[in-house]
Length: 162
Length: 102
Image (cartoon, rainbow over all chains, first blue to last red; front, side, top):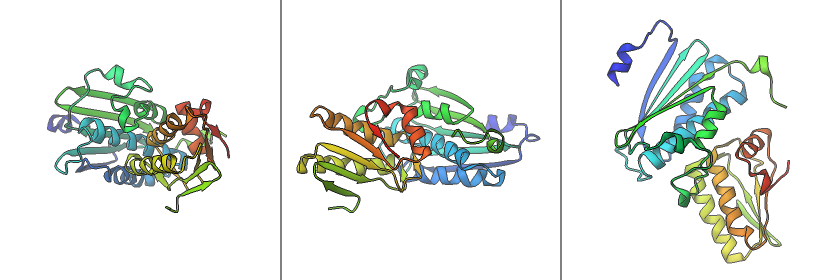
């Protein structure tokens, strides 16, 4: 992790936060509140705020349920790094859980490994739909990194879909 | 009986919370199933009037209830769906198995 930070080009970055929180389900709402507060200065539309909140909620839920196998251990940690490059938001959700064997399979809509928990298998599909870019890297036994980007402040140009 | 749940004829009405995520969904599903079993209701109506946020956990609640009641001919309805909730329901493709109303 330190390597990544060292390589980072800070000339582009206008704002940054690093959060570390326990992998318990109460923190799903904390994570999306934090990210929505973080992008508020960019004057996002309601739609954009909801998009980002939904995507973050999916990623954090995945980390809790799949990464840390829904154990709710207070010592299991999720790291959320957000940065702004002007009007582009980049969010990283990192867990040190079980990791994903087959990322392509995991990202298929409706595919879930936990149907007994009523997971719909739509998590990654929602992240893809609501963000501009999604990148998932994982190593079995090491954990998973979900990186997402979205340009904020396009609302006034595109307008609402309806 | 909880305030969020009401039975009218053989419809179970569920008033959904402001924010629906995995944390909230566990409780809603468990309670709904208890009413479906104990009161023998056929249909389930999800009321999204107060809901401003929902992620895929909401889809899990809906599809889970649908699976429980559809084999007995029951129907699932989503009412008071704002544009945001409707977008999520359509994205997940559940409009084929449930009735979505405004």
